[in-house]
Amino acid sequence: MNRQPGAISASMMCADLAHLREDLDVLAQEKVEYLHIDVMDGEFVPNLGLGVDYIRRLRDMTDIPLDIHLMVERPEDKLDWFGIRPADRVCIHYESTRHVQRTLDRAKRYGCKVMLAINPATPVCSVEEVLDTVDGISVLTVNPGFAGQKIVASCIKKTEKLSRFLEEAGADELDIEVDGNVSCAYAAQLRRLGANIFVAGSSSIFTPDGRVRREQAAALRAAISG
Ligand code: DX5
Ligand code: ZN
Image (cartoon, rainbow, N blue to C red; front, top):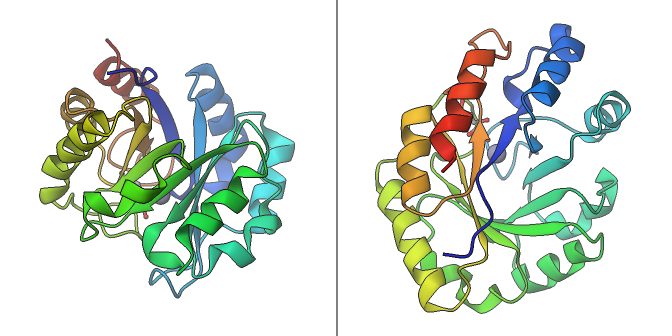
């Protein structure tokens, strides 16, 4: 397997706004690689979430690159809104556009890493024709839209299947991100099955009231290393 070592993407929808400054400092000290931004439009997912102004404000507060997860209909029309930078990741859902390849191609113009996300019911083979266009696949291990959900059990096997699929396709350098209920225990298991980017929300590094749990950040790092 030629995949990059494990990275943490801290899920900012789980962070308490009242303590954002302090918690961003903790996340920087823990060297989290990305801040995961769940952008939700109330159409693609049954929730509204982090938007353009939030991202702009966050940029003033931190240099940690963003992992922008677009849970919106027609992302191709909205890509320009987010001020995407070369160090960022942007993640587009297979199910959100009729023109998946063109949308991914458009996202590449920002010089960032481009990810294709698949919902729990979307089969692994859906990604086959765009392997040369993406930098990685994001496996939604819950139906997206809300933090604090329970993992869809079949998505564990699906991650293993994706890993094997990429290997057989000669694309085992592509990143595999896992998003949803990624506890330290699931992270360790999913790492063994091939995942290398771990979205860390209320199941690991955030308390229910939205503070970063430092010891959990260290535990997650240990679970995904080696
Ligand atoms: C998907 C989101 C959630 C969440 C992750 O819509 O990305 O998966 O923030 O955190 P937990 O650990 O609460 O599932
Ligand atoms: Zn997400």
